Image (cartoon, rainbow, N blue to C red; front, side, top):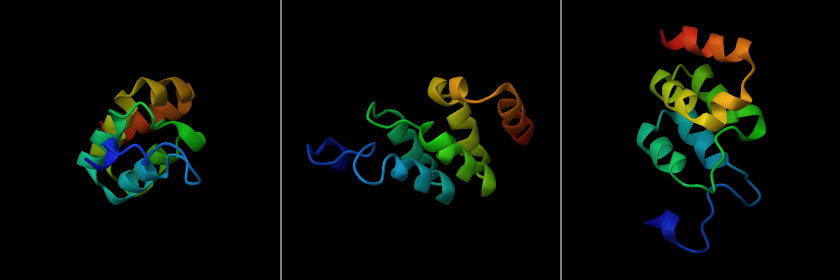
Length: 89
């Protein structure tokens, strides 16, 4: 409901794409799923900060979700993608 408010932008403002990074770090899978559906959110922003935080805190379900997103997958080097894949396999 909050995401539908015209003054709320989870992908912009001073903390660009910080909500998905925080949700990834904290293991909030449902919030990450919700944010991934919002076109204003770029999960690959800030050098894949959301993915790096999920990996750092061993949030494997969120790593899987983010790797499945084309924006994240396309922005990763082959080596980084393979490292992430090895975490979840």
